Image (cartoon, rainbow over all chains, first blue to last red; front, side, top):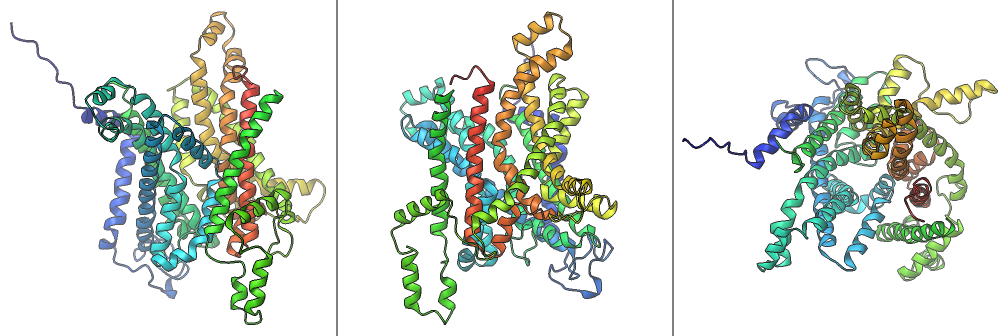
Length: 299
Length: 318
């Protein structure tokens, strides 16, 4: 008798991808985000208008062939400014996410692996940071340290470093809590015990066995961090306390546009829509990843 | 109950201390000096500046300065606003009622939207309404408040001309017209905040209802033949609201952030816009005091959340 054909189970990567692909909105969002990112990365190569070409003959114009997104009150081309600003907004989002995730993983793993005083102390600090009023504190730190960092890293770099550090430094708590919770259950599992019995050091247990298994929820949480960081940066710039006027991030464009809403609504609408679409697509991708990375799901 | 209250209050003290320590560290590490303006002023000799510094205690060790700052904050001695030329506590007290009015009513509106929708979506998960509500909730909390505010102004003030977009405290009207005008100008700021919050509250309510609806006692109630309406309202909703109450209180830091932005867009004269104006005017005492007030309010709301949770849920032991 011929052996029955055994269906080879799909690899975990493929299964994850299949579950992600089932979330249609998430797939559409991933495409949208990819288009947006390609647009801001390749945009300057295709659209060679300088962001600071002032043209007083064409101020506050609506979209046209010469200026697809219209112009602002100095006649500067908004498409070029949006592309430039998008680069910064997205870079801030991803960099701040990296900072928050790294800090969160470190704090969470240390708390999750220690059994005595360190864990409660770190969790107390985490709860403390969770109960800080984020936006006021963010504004306060930027207000107080703006000038010194400008002197250290230059106008653009200084603000960038500071905004990334502060947003990242105020948003690591959810990741830390997640990582700790995962560690608490994983460190008692048999495979970790086996590794321990084979003489794996603490570091090897964490890096080789526990952390890789704890990453699923962390990836989901850090996806959401990107959109939170983009919103935080836009909020700062919108309040006039983020990047200076010559660096047109999306929030800054909205801030400049809000006094001309009656004559030039396109100015605000393009920038606002860009922020909204980016954040929305990242949130949907996070939702899709949550479905895809949940190990309890089969299929 | 009294013991529980006391224990909770005692737990709140270290977090208040921790927050004040963080705030003070930020302040102490910050470059700049309240007397730097005098340094550039040729009419003030360096010796005078130095003795002023000494008299304000700026040369003391940092721990002494922290303790003195704490004592002053606790006494309500928050300094003097450089820009407005009045005491900071008077200035803040003038602004607090407006902010509380805007935040409070937006929370009420948000819950009025979120609770019915979340309840319905949670009872019929994966139904059409649930999916629509879920998608709309995603849209809702992906729309930053500053963009919704601008959209509202564009549509309702500029395009349709229905609502004023600048908030005025001294309305030129009296009697019921005053109330009407006040109501009209509050619509946009309140609804911008409310829509943003309603989006996340809907998801909380849905999750809480989903958790409760599959418990045994609900099935018992249904099996007894109670009509579905009263099972939903009296059995499911009441218990599902317990975690929601806590979550609403814990959302306060985000709500304050939203209030700062909204107040700035619609020029509502509240605490949030005071903070921004003070920052743009380099008015450090006001900036510090407003941040501290926000921090205290967050701790207060955490405490309220804890207490409400203990009061609403008899399973929590005091």
